[in-house]
Length: 109
Ligand SMILES: [Zn+2]
Image 1 (cartoon, rainbow, N blue to C red):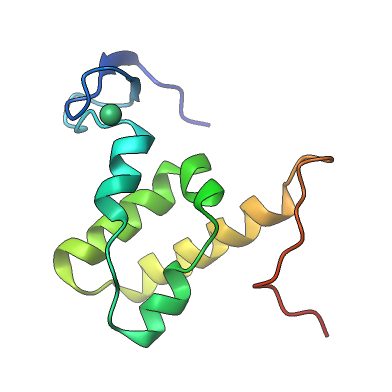
Image 2 (tube, rainbow, N blue to C red):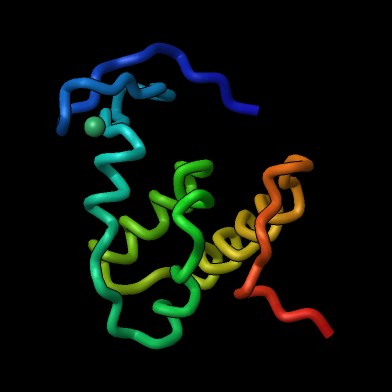
């Protein structure tokens, strides 16, 4: 488990505090990052992959960073895709009782 080293104000809204893990990290709060990430994706494969409930992105900076990387470079490595899918799966399975909502995106056989 990585523990944030310090906190810094978000560089976009200058209101929210951001947990910083390294000096190189860009201080951006999840709200502003979500706004930045809210762009249409053309590639059907990635469109499907990134089509997740906002709460998952809010929970995981990793998911946000992967989406940001995709939007910046227009592609991802297989490793990034695998890690993304695994994180989504873990987040969905670790849902706290009471917060679970009906999942429409998940297929059940
Ligand atoms: Zn912000």
